[in-house]
Image (cartoon, rainbow, N blue to C red; front, side, top):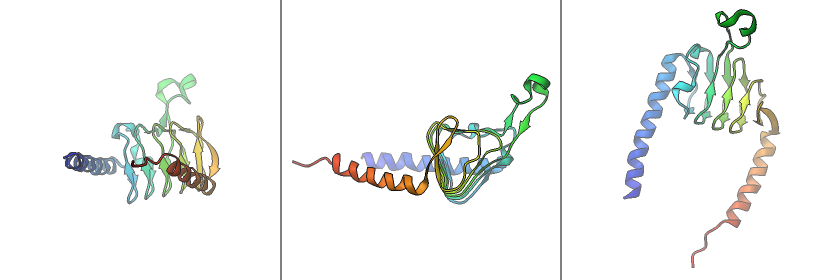
Length: 164
């Protein structure tokens, strides 16, 4: 019974993801193939969605905010009459963790993992893991993956539920 309910709910969840992806593309966001955007459409900057580019095979997790404009840079001198804007480019095979904030003018390379809750204010090169506020490179992707494999093996052997 539970599996039928799960399939039913999953069907509508995936339908809503497809609808969201189409709506983002209509707004002008450039999205590559096999990319999944879990964050709300409202978390994409509605001023300039057309200068956001997301590559192929990417994941943008929930509660991630993509901002393409900034009033604060000009506020002390020109007030709200002037704003700056900046393109956001996310490369292929990139994972953006839950609750990240990506600021204007940022380029995130290909094969990158951005840790949960990170504030990305500077560009991030290819094949790295970045995290923090502000986001900084903490490891190469290769080194991170080797550590994760070791951690996963330790987890599997430690937390196995044994049948009696």
